[in-house]
Image (cartoon, rainbow over all chains, first blue to last red; front, side, top):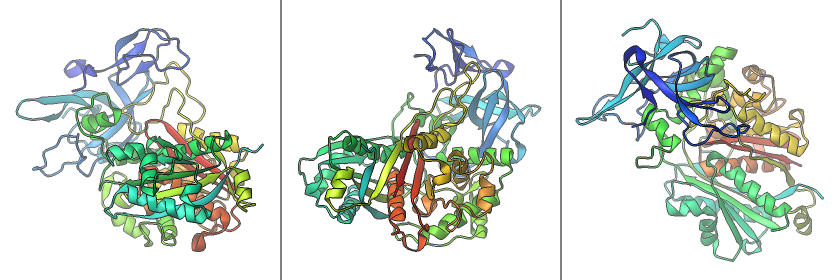
Length: 141
Length: 396
């Protein structure tokens, strides 16, 4: 659904951003048009895999079913998921994502280390939509 | 030469869920503002409409839609869209026309008929729309972001859910005194704590509702005001419409990620703080001179953030300022004497205009039971989706 925002499987899974060849600014979601640094004359934007691990900047959850275009089965009871904003140290960027299923706000603290893992956003009979999830390090489920 | 424009009239349609169209709310507010100014619609040389995107085609051309409803009379017309900052940009457009001499007197109108529940993006598959993407890819509603900010404050500053609840208690008590507010009932901390969690740690009563509503202002040159016998009107002295500066390091609605600060040093202040500073600088007024402020309390926790962004207190001291009673009616710097969004709910293009209506009534001494004694200087602040600043500073 989102083209080239992530790649790989298992331990090789990475979010994909881009980096400006002139000023080294990093962008996620990927910026393929122009470097957005106003002080930059503009350079080539090259694909850049982001750090796998970061620290929780903040977190919350979604106790009510979000409206469309979020896809969920209205026939099933709503299962809240946690959302985590994660600061990646070397990129100094905060990236929002859902937590892996089963992780609740009670499992999280600001500053905790998490890592990015592949996840499933949703599926129907024809398609499975994949995405990224954040998972506290040391949790393997 | 003064950079002031006069507020000759202010009017509102009461907020609520009325089940009618936004044109009706805006037209009612416009007629109220005209009556307050003692002017006829035919006296108005220019109209600026703040757009709603949920009214379909007419919503995108709000200025002309309101002009048609009031009766075509050939006025200069403009329509502006800047999400939650639409109202402030409409005020700014009117002010620019007045200060440049293009118009003597301008009617500014904003109104909305909001959907129930969560705001959602327009339909279709729109992969280039950040607002669509955050819903589709993450299920990140507006309260998601409010919850992130609230939790971050708890971690950084030690704010508690009880602190957040006290914002609602304060604002509900003020809204109970405002005939234009949707919710006119006091709320207790126990009621906040008993309401359902929406986005941890925030509960239903921590988060503003979506509402119908309308607000309008009649603005004029100081010379026009004097000719009409208004010797000492409320005056708008500054309108801040700034964008963020790169890199913006606070995760803002509707973004999935911040800018990276790896290679460019972030600005000394956040986007929200820069909105207020721009207004202070333009007006030549400091935070210590404020009599009151109207801020965008999309959530209770966000109101505390604004205290700091407006420099009413130091960073991390918002909850302390609240606990001291400084921001309550009778305190050193009352915030959201109108009752705020907690009492009104969001009617997006109307809200920033409604904030200026409240300042106008307060600075005139016409705010009834919720009057801030001796009010002379007021500031509004809000933030429009996608990086629109919004603050208006008014004086008497």
